[in-house]
Image 1: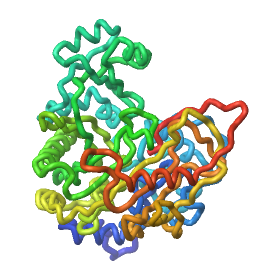
Image 2: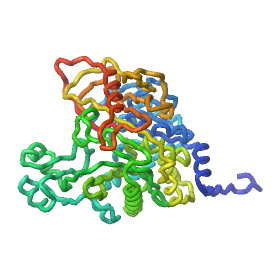
Image 3: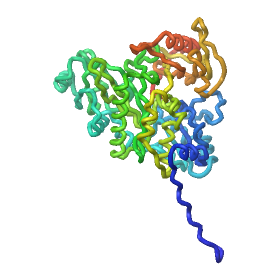
Image 4: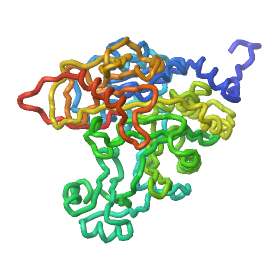
Length: 489
């Protein structure tokens, strides 16, 4: 330092006060933030809200036409068993590491799924992970722990017992009082693979290898219920709560898994005002308890509404962004204020902020701030394996008066959908990919509803499903290889 010069004092971070400051902060953001995942679906459009937000993906859904998506050339790798495997592969890929290095100093990373190996690889690549630690996420993701967190928060679960199950006889002994028809869930996994409906010993024997020896099992009374989903973000200022969404569950036209999630609807009159209010209150309480457990940031809760009693129960927790995040972050209230995920980034940015969470939650609960959209996730539902020879490209499709579906134009914006006769389709499986039972083929997003008031697929939904499924063609394999399935979305 030259004589006579003053020592430079670091500037204090300016406190962000209200939505205008928060939006401007991200509009001018200079810190590289990267969403690393199989596709960019879960955070679709976030790059339009946050300067220097990029996607590094394994699947090229856009055939190289999305300006902020980078997909490296295929490199040799072991067979993927999970989304974590994909992310760990990407974080060791030379092209990815070169791309990250060129972004500048200390880029930040966000994921759909990650494990402790992912954290080590991100650190090696000199990237911070803007999510709670994998170890903590794993702990609260445990369905048994979720029940206990809910109990602390005053958020009830369906009447249940938590027990290690050793036999059918023992199951019946521990579940006395829950009725003849039971639902069993193991600690981890999604509802399509780890939820078992048990009424008889025959049902039990069918799944006993997935129940016995799996540690504590959640044994629930089976209720006549409707599924719903709600996303939220717990921050130092409080828990910000999104709208309650209906869920598409177990439709054989979309998924081979009984009880498997396959889409969502968001609209102003989902369920009754009383149920929507109860869901918001439960979610706020759960978020506040999560923060006491050490967790912060984005999460999603599934609620089960008992159609006989009208009671609402906690279904499960997803301590992450989810397949429903695209719906939450594109709703009308998000465009009026900011996407919910922006508050997750704000929480991890280290920027001091002041926010009236109560006022924000009140605005987001206003039906006038919720427009009507739906999405479905289409899997290969047949017990067969082939190679895809034709696949529809991502973009906007139009339904003709006769119900047939035609490609209209390429786009990567959901907002480009102008009416209920149009839809945005995001292709997941493409030409040359294996098509096996449970493989994700693509996601369709459209205005309006896909279900009736009785939670059945409506006629329009079936036309969209049949039309888009018909655009996939494949050729058989001799002999057919064994293909595993894991959750991409």
